[in-house]
Image (tube, helix red, strand yellow):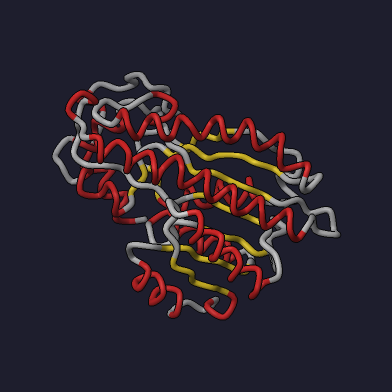
Length: 282
């Protein structure tokens, strides 16, 4: 299926992470130009992109999403190279360690979590919408797309991570507000969000290595498996499509194996070894 993303320009924050790289590969596979934003692992991101077949249509930009001025400069660089930005994926985020009840969490941790996961997404959206206001809509009727990456923690909560859950829950307000604002800039512009559950990335791999961790995660999911980064990236590509999802806006799609926030399976019904084996095969 043609998603209509060929020759469009997609800006992806947090591009050096597991989901970020999967997004780069997915959008590149659809023929899109890429603006890859990274910060902490930017040198690693540049090396990764340089080694890909699609590197000639990719621009790597260092920018901290908690710094509006850096995002504005990054968007300016993207406009200089590609002329416009059609898709923005606010993917950058951080899951804090260790588990801490709120009364024990430091002010620094709480502020940092909110800065990256909530304000970072807000600043990204602000910079993208400013760029869209500057360039105006496309002439072919293919509307712009803004997609946030949330978390099931924002829907169901997460013990020991109230700061993270609060940040991700706040993205719901951005989706429901901005889906009403973006048509003022682009009559076919859309805003949506994907909410991943447990997804195998480097950010949580250490946590999933604990004996019993996978079984515990899968107990709340009818589908007894963990998501791969590409599962999230493909869902975002579909939501970002100006053809397949042309009439989809203000929606939150949960990619979490049917998770409902309640136990579905007993511990004895989860074959953790089988889940790990399948991950290695994939």
